[in-house]
Image (cartoon, rainbow, N blue to C red; front, side, top):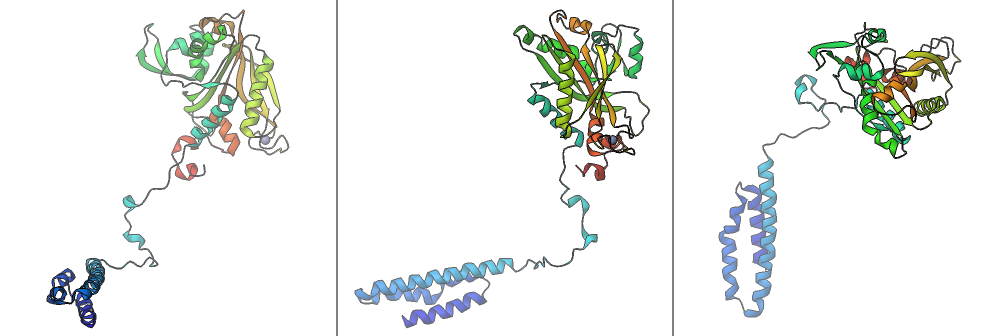
Length: 347
Ligand SMILES: [Zn+2]
């Protein structure tokens, strides 16, 4: 056993000083020890063999440790506390800042969620449409002067009637399709309830309040016995949910070809609640003209094969950019499409 201890000490020292430590397992000393086992008295062989095996395990652990040391020796040590050399950074290799959902998109999700809880489905609009859906189906006959109010972008392409296609100037361009898609619900005694939050395009002169591309949410509700009272209650409920506070509303008569009667819908300023003469959001008036709405014109229902003698409904159209600007006190609509990160990172 003393001999084993002596050899153990010698071989462990050799492992620590050699570049090929695993060769120690083939050393002459180890082979001689194994050769001694059969020469021992039978009763000693087991203890002696066991002691050699324990030593061999210790040698193997030392070899693993030494091999790890040898393979790591070429790596430069890293001082994680050292100051960073900014000039040595390669911008393309840096991890990018985390992206976020565009504020208009996340607000559209919130708007859709409020209407979903009131039983409305959400439909998408389209970016090119024909004049039937944009005008005729909405009770703007050909040559109607109100067509000019929309400053529509026209394409060179024409439809089957020879009319030029257009980039929709309002989400009402989907009204006829939505009414037709869900009209079978009316026969089952249910209602048509849908919103269309999407992009619209107008040939506007750009300023802090006008963009050529912006977002609107269209709402359509049709059933038996729908009244102006339902319209006002629905819009008031939506706006109070959206702004998270009680708001007063006011309706003034207005004119749209596709609703009769038509209204301009104003709400008490959610910013100053009419208490600040210098409020920039409402110009100190305490009221904000926010959206157009009304009872769906009988001709619009007829264009979708819905009998206006049996069913009535309301429709509204609201600028989403404006809603969001008022919610967050954003003073310039052009920020939304600017791609400016210092603006977008606030949301
Ligand atoms: Zn105000």
